[in-house]
Length: 142
Ligand SMILES: CC(C)(COP(=O)(O)OP(=O)(O)OC[C@H]1O[C@@H](n2cnc3c(N)ncnc32)[C@H](O)[C@@H]1OP(=O)(O)O)[C@@H](O)C(=O)NCCC(=O)NCCS
Image (cartoon, rainbow, N blue to C red; front, side, top):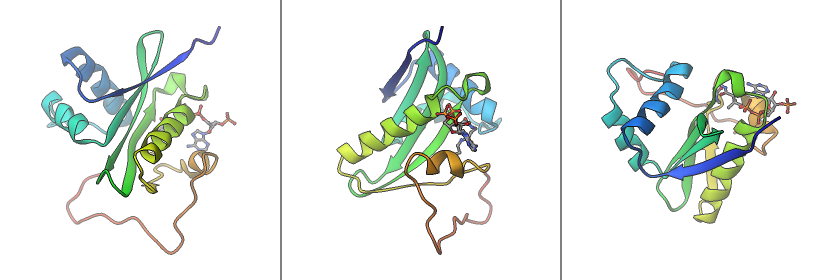
């Protein structure tokens, strides 16, 4: 029987919580060997919002937004554990992030759709920025 998804915004996490979130980052290959739990704690604190998705008390997904807190925001680091995909968690995360940002008065909400995930975002009301292209500073790592 499918269990209820719980979404929770956090501003900080204890050591065990940080460890669980790092597992999600690692699963996506978004965690570097040199990254530390302390870095994650700062990243959570510095984000406009950081959202967790849990099922049966187990962390299964996350997403966050970085922003000036006034007009613009970028959604980042949206991921759901492989075995939990296709059950609506990813959509629920995006809807909750967008709702939260709009409630804060933020009107420009962008993101980079990695790994051909654009159809997923298109279904959630996002469209490509025509004549615009994401760019990275030399030496940045993805
Ligand atoms: C993208 C992601 C977050 C979606 O999470 P999810 O929990 O599977 O999302 P949902 O269950 O809400 O999926 C909604 C729909 O989008 C579809 N979908 C999900 N990812 C998709 C993708 N990459 N391309 C096309 N369609 C996709 C699902 O098949 C589903 O369709 P359905 O309802 O017809 O079955 C998840 O696949 C993931 O973690 N991917 C790896 C990380 C990533 O790519 N993050 C986003 C880019 S930064």
